[in-house]
Amino acid sequence: MTRGKVERDKAVSAQYEDFPYPPRNPEDERDRLITGSPSHLDELNHYIFAGKRDFSKPFRALVAGGGTGDALIMLAQQLADRGQAGHVTYLDMSKASRAVAEARADVRGLSNIEFHTGSLLDLPAMDLEPFDYIDCCGVLHHLESPEDGLTALEAVLSDDGGMGLMVYATLGRTGVYHAQKALQMLVGDDPQKKQVPLAKTFIKDLPSTNWLTRNPFVGDHKMGNDAPFFDLLLHPRDKSYLVPELDDLLSDANLSLVSFLEPVKYDPTVFLKDKELIKRARKLSNLDRASLAENITGSLKTHLFYVRKTQQETAIAKIGPEMIPILKEGNPAETLASAFRGKKKFTITFDSEKIEFDLPDRISEIVALCDGQLSLGEIQKKLGLNWEGMRSAFAPIFKLLNGWNILWLKKQLQK
Image 1 (cartoon, rainbow, N blue to C red):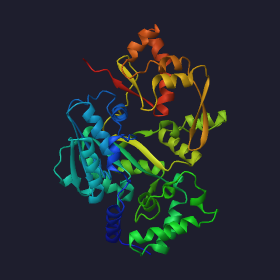
Image 2 (cartoon, rainbow, N blue to C red; image 1 turned 120 degrees about the vertical axis):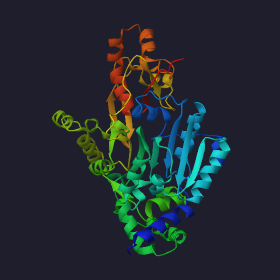
Image 3 (tube, one colour; image 1 turned 180 degrees about the vertical axis):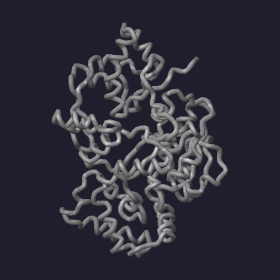
Image 4 (cartoon, rainbow, N blue to C red; image 1 turned 30 degrees about the vertical axis):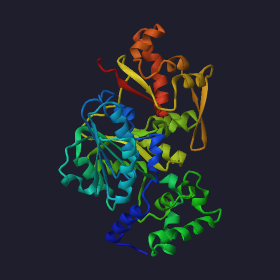
């Protein structure tokens, strides 16, 4: 069964009316805030604005293809917590998804959001002011032309701004496209809501030799909810990317990669054991190292990353006495320091693979002082070090924890 572009466009639109994604209950906003990557304010500040952005000053963000609102609510709430100057624009073609996002915002009492229904391809004609930041996650790979979608986003991005993007990664989705093709042949002509029961039966009865059955990294079809099941296995149109293909996509839209998340997953030397192979890997370009890493691990099912316009220099925050180290939520300074205390090595599990890391000297002592308030200069004084001593001690700690994406930097603002 082969569908034309117009039919696929209609099918994609119908999917998100029938199955708003991801499934969310607005009442849950009373008890929790979903945070993640990209688009956490401290994270995007670190990667796009050199840690120097003051979010109490005017800041315009766009969530393009906002779905039921995870990135929207995170951005709007974090901006509201820092003042009244931040504003978020939501755009999605699904009225059903927008209704969920609006309800979530209402529960939180957020008033810094402007809602639009439509396609991100229409952005250049919508007469909107340029945005300082754009979030577009899980959208481009569902367009007929992801290149046109990214070009439309670039057209409404301010020259000194950046984007947080997510697209599917090919290797970690091994088996997904085989199952999609089989289901298109078996149930693709049925109305979308009627496809799900038979598709679930099909998946349940797959042999152990099937690549989807053997893939431990994909699990949306096991969640019991129809929306993620449909999105994974019955979606009318999706595409995945290898790192070199992603670089081509960005280049065509006049955009350049700033950083993947988590950075350590794109470092092949983390996964190699042999010293000669590690030496050879270190000689590769940044892009080739990332490509090598994804081919070694085989587990990446999405690529999350930040980009800026090609003519702009990258603006990742750098170590300096005026910078404040910020630990990601869920990693309290003292708890993390205690986990490191007295140890020379520390094991992290990435996609079921245990990786052992060497711990830098004084990591426990320094991490305990990373309370989100003290600058590196102030920590330096508490440790009785000169600045060069502080930089030398902190640099390997920062490289390790930033690689895990749990430590960022922001500039100490003038009081």
